[in-house]
Image 1 (cartoon, each protein chain N blue to C red):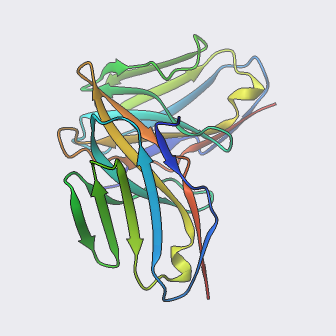
Image 2: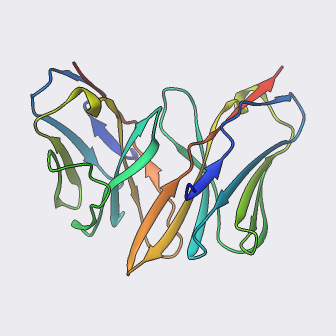
Image 3: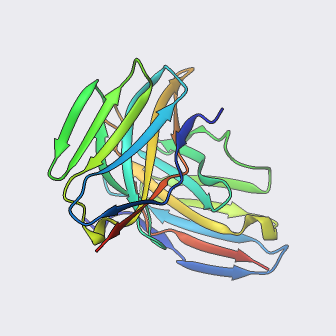
Length: 114
Length: 113
């Protein structure tokens, strides 16, 4: 299995621009998670999906952030408009779910907003 | 009080020694506990999961869980320089029918050759 795939790996954009991050989970995994990692705040869960349905988006920082999962093999995290404080590494992870819920992370997207 | 606490380190141990990493959590409803290793510039990699009180061993790694005292620890035997990384403790809590995943900020481990 190729593991969790994320694109792009690096993104540099200017403040105010729209940014779209993409994720392909491991085939057969029912849960998909989006995390953000910064030095100051560590790893924060933004949102997670179960069977393509958003279950908990309480970690999404504000309305500028949105996430979708149109099918079992694809999800996007969009920031519009982007701000310098959004600069971070964004990880996507997936898992089988259930009682034994081990998550597998993608390589991450390093976002820099200037 | 943070929901999952770890000493940020760095924890320095000589090669061949046992490294002991600790994590405490605040929510007694926590069900599942995980240790991830993260090398600089890389993504977190699952090392071990533990769900019941007691010890769980996997190779050089042993996870220990004590739900009464609300702590989970990771022991690394025969530490190697390649074990130098940040170790993240993660906890899964069920709240109002949904899962909540909380990570600690990690402990940086340095194994000295």
